[in-house]
Amino acid sequence: MATAHLIHGYIGAGKTTFARRLEEELPAIRFSHDEWMANLYGDDPPMNQFAELHQRVSKLIDTYWTRSLALGLDVVLDFGFWSRRQRDETKATAVALGARTRLYLLECSEDEAWRRVDKRNAHLGGSLLIVRNTFEMLKSRFEPLADDEDRTEVSS
Image 1 (cartoon, rainbow, N blue to C red):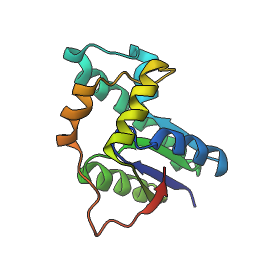
Image 2: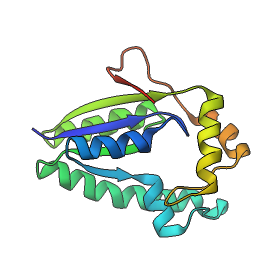
Image 3: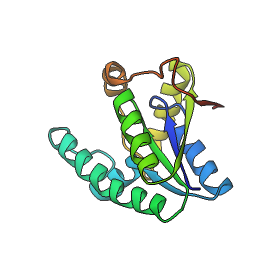
C-alpha cells in the first residue's frame, strides 16, 4: 500500500534536506512546493503576486502527487503543513485514494533555523529567498502539531 509522507516544520527546520533523504531511502517521489515556485517564478517572486502563484503551484502539484499515490507510488510531501486543516485534508485525500499517511515533525531552535535560512539565502539553488522580516512575520501563520496528531519526530 502506498504512503503519503507529510513533512511538517517551520522555515529552516530541515524539511527539504530530510525530504530528499527520505525520497532516496524509500524510494518515493518528492514534491517540494518551494522548489516548484522557484523553478517556475524565480527565487523571489513578487510579493503582490505571491498568493496567486502559490495557489497555482499548489493545484499543479496536487494533480501529480495524488496521481502518483493512486498508482501505488509513495510520495514525500515537502509542504511544511503549517495548518491542522491542511494536514487533515491531505490525510483524508490520501486515505480516499487507498493510501496510508505518515506525518514527520522537524524542529530546531529559532536561532538555528534563522542561521540555516541565512546560509541558504547566499546560495539559493532552487529555494525561495526568505529575508529576516518575512521569517518573523510568518510565525503567526505556523500552527504546531496538536497532542492528538500522531507523528514521527526527526532530529534535524
